[in-house]
Amino acid sequence: MHFTRIFVTSVIAALGLLVLLLCWPFYSVPTGSRGVLTQFGAIKGIESEGLVIVPPWQKVNIFSIRAETADINKASGSTSDTQPVDVDLTVRYSIMPDRVAEVYEKYSHNGDLASYVQTATQEVFKAVTAKYTAPDLIGKRSQVSSDILDMLKQKLEKYGAQVINIDMRNFAFSPSYMNAINEKVTQEQLRLGAENKLKTVESEQKQKVAIAEAEANALKARADGEAYATVKEATAKAEALRVQNVALAQNKDVLELRRIEVEQTKAEKWDGKLPTAIYAGAPIPFLNIGNKP
Image 1 (cartoon, rainbow, N blue to C red):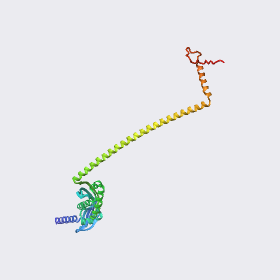
Image 2 (cartoon, rainbow, N blue to C red):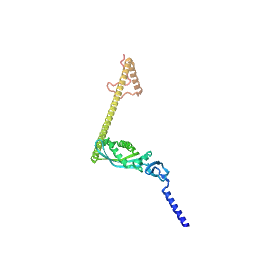
Image 3 (cartoon, rainbow, N blue to C red):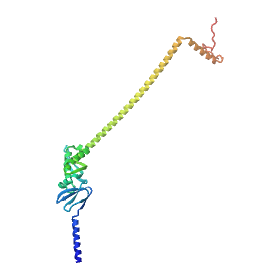
Image 4 (cartoon, rainbow, N blue to C red):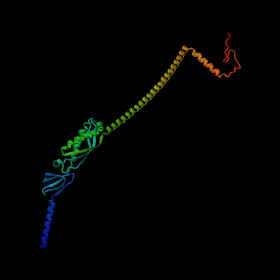
């Protein structure tokens, strides 16, 4: 009897534990997720992160709203000048928190929209590349990326997704076109090199001309200065002679006075001796014998 009672108690406890496990009401929603409550397949509510108490007749489904990544390889398009082009892109996106129920019901039970993103990106890339020529597609890469991002945001919004950013890894044109581009770049570099060399030569020639002109101007200025100085000196001498002649003409005694001063100087320096040899017609110093009356 005692054994039977223990057995029954154990069975009841096991059944209670099984029921508790089957009807466990406590669940947790991880960070970066939402809990979609369903009852027999119908959505009954959306729970935020944290502890959630769920009745036995409902189920909580974990739905991610974290950033997801979709890689699109070899997205193809054609430029406005009919050049085929391929590109590899990476799109980062996430589900809008206020549209979790809609996305869960229509597109994905876990927040993965990679297939929709890939299809939408292919369409957008074709539309954007058709607006650009091949050279512009290369030269305006940042603008092309911005156009793709704007159009992709509009495209994915209807799926309840928001685009975080896109990365374009590379453009790939046909081999023949790439060869043509490389050849054009080479020719352009050669042209620029020739232009730069020509500018250098022209600059050097201009510098030489400027130096020659400066030297010529310096020589001319020096010659002008010397000529001016000569003229001024000659003018000054002529003026001095003119003044002297005028003075002598006005007072003839000045000339006689100067002659007397010269004779006086000679007399002061004479030692009193007559010259030992007197040539015919030579004057005897300080001997002035005039005719007696």
